[in-house]
Image (cartoon, rainbow, N blue to C red):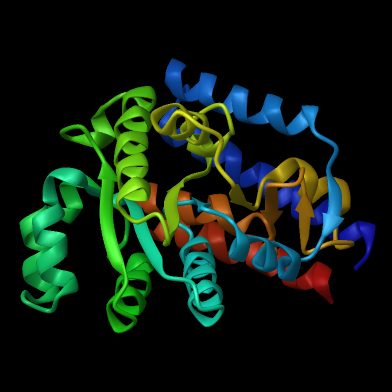
Length: 287
């Protein structure tokens, strides 16, 4: 792919980010701090080209896999399903921890995973729209695959109404559940679905180590981080940040924040026009 196409992608990405800022305004201070720490970590490491297959091989020989989630982008949730498939096909027993479910609703989650309540009742009991709010359609494949393959699942979010709580408190809450689950199932691999910003090593992964009181063999899979994407262009489908951190790419990158803009605007007519214009420009550049 040509540098010209990458330049078009970058311009479209920036246009989407401008529209998002118009919708949400300034970033809350704690979220800004988390993003700054995440970006600072990434700039300190020596990033090298890799391949998605290398990341998938790496997940099979660790204790815990953190899979970064961009909540409005279905490709992010599809990556988690691929990780689960890779582990199960490799013969690993898996426990899946999910940020999208409050730990207070663990009993409801257990009933749903056992097939004792319907999907509609499950979503009503856990008040999905209020406690998580992102599209269930994106997350359904995760739950369906986990049920079909008899995986254990634990809710990680909290305490209380998590989306209104601080990121630090949510990480501390999740770390205690992850550590307790790993101690209860030492022969199983723990897979964690969590937003990317939580997964800078100094955030949730470090809190899990502190909760366990030891080091942990881990792999952190981040997705669609912009800095290495622009750096490597179309030369790599993934990059390796260090021995335990990978970034996977889904092209074109502007579709990631575009999914968030669609969620913010609830896909109104103005959004559809904007999306169609961007997609048209991209397809034209793609030739």
